[in-house]
Length: 140
Length: 139
Image (cartoon, rainbow over all chains, first blue to last red; front, side, top):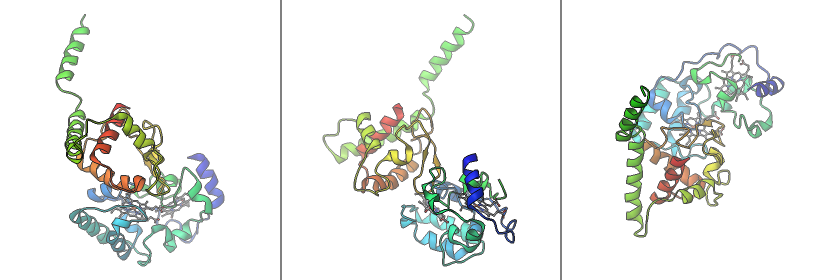
């Protein structure tokens, strides 16, 4: 953990205007979402994306960023309703949290973030935010 | 002597009722064995050795970034793994390290149905699934 943070101090700048606004995001409370969407990465909180983005994601689970995340129709409908019903704001044309403008403002990743074996992906929120699964993104 | 008696009693009890996870795991293996026999008349039981070979690979035909189960789960199934795409940690696959592995039939089937195409470029046969579980249950 410590070496990662040390590296980050050099590679990220925080926009003071936004700092604080997104520190706490309501945690996921829906059991099916936690189980099915928390297998390959943490179950992202619904407020991290707008409703349209969640709809697009739920429309394409069979080819989900290169993985097959397909689910039975009833389970998928249940999860969709939860995510869309608790969605946040942002650009609905973008499916990724990590491409949303607020995210890019908060994070300036070095190009080699994928090669860091402890991080691998910008979407690996937990690698840097220890309590991300509980919706806490304040300094840590 | 005082401690010996309860211990013996305990042993007898646990002999009669195997650890809770074994029942479901045995049932899953039995179902795969039945399916394997139906798939191939020459099926003669699962092989831990074949399971190990499948797990370690490397294979071609699947996604280039995942040539083996071991890519994400590490070559040592008792170690924690990491999803190559998302970076998320994965609990060990070895039953000794993760006692609840292979105890929920629907979850087991879901994982194989996703991960076999990623590694092999095709679904796993029932025999292959049983081989892998057999090997990991011994680790």
